[in-house]
Length: 97
Image (cartoon, rainbow, N blue to C red):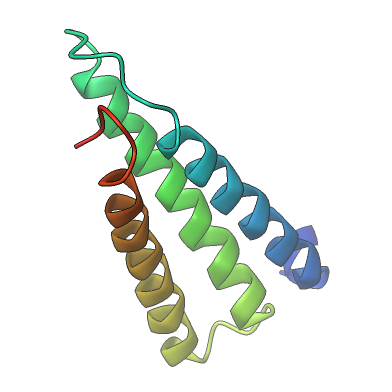
């Protein structure tokens, strides 16, 4: 059974772009120093947002046909590459490490 996003896989790419923009926006905000208690929240945010990025990228690439496992690997690789680029981008934002 195909989901709505699998039938309209082009919209999944729009969702991927929106999520990528959200990640970029939040990683561009300068940090104001160490804030205790946010450690677990940031881990949950990273896990959740990159899960959604990967999920919608998989839906968009696979187009409802889960037989092509190479596309799933491609989606995971692209998500990891975006995460690496995001961490590199944060090196140039003041207060971020």
